[in-house]
Image 1: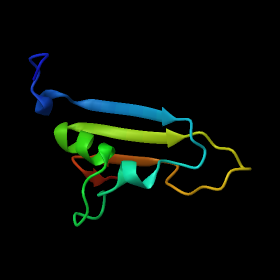
Image 2: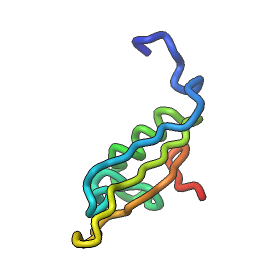
Image 3: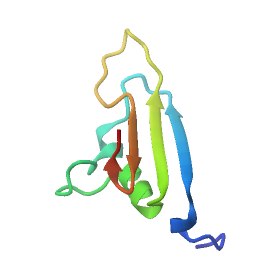
Length: 81
């Protein structure tokens, strides 16, 4: 709590747009929807800030095969919508 803000008091929407047209890599969203694996960075961030909605979108390039997820929305370590 370096800034003196309790993570539970962080409320709102964090919108991340990433440039990889293959989508968000599996290691980054690992653990969302599966508690039997270690959480990836997105789940860790979402758990640390449970009242923050995290929306991730990706660049789209039709010539690139999608291997991850292009878009996701999470809150408190779980998918929403």
